[in-house]
Length: 153
Image (tube, rainbow, N blue to C red; front, top):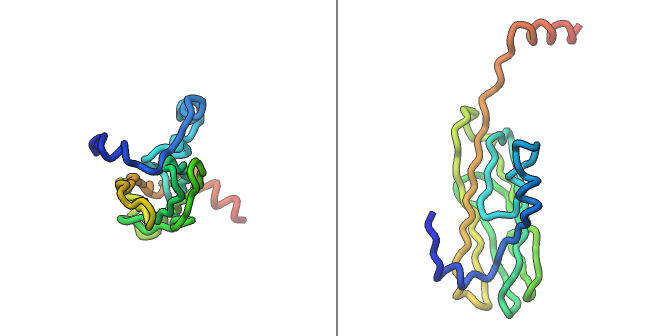
């Protein structure tokens, strides 16, 4: 995407994240980047389903309602409608179902759109990208096949 400063200045919701959480999410140290409270959501290994949680904070001076939905992949958003007072935060969970996605390791893309409803509708739509991949099934080597035969007896 591209940065649109005029839209960013009018955004009614923000996502906050700390330096400590970024350091803890480093995959080289066993962290999970998907757990960061950032606009993008992605998982390389998403067999069956995967979930993301994002915490939005209302920076408007008034109470506002938003609706959230995913397009591009099958997903459930909870809550899909939420109202926040000024300064209030809400955790929104997105569960992407990948049962119909080919397990070939290629990336599939979607978008979580959060739109203002009623109140101050001059805010821009928030569009958060989602990328998931379903890895191919692991091939068993000869040793694993022999061991699995013995464990069944």
